[in-house]
Image (cartoon, rainbow, N blue to C red; front, side):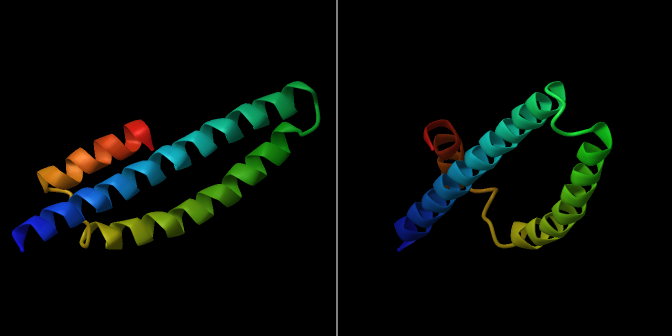
Length: 91
């Protein structure tokens, strides 16, 4: 039954890695979108600052949740780390 724990850790790492890659990709697309919108004058600097402030408040809530999740995820497992790398690379 030890192999089940290893496979579970690997799959969890794979999912977390794929999710992290998608979140990073979405963030980069949003940055490019805001730069483009500001360059063409569709939004002002003040609107961007207000939007980023609201995102910051939401990010603080997500960060709290992630800290609690850290106690559940087996991030010290080699299988998890391998799955995380593979998920981020291929995800």
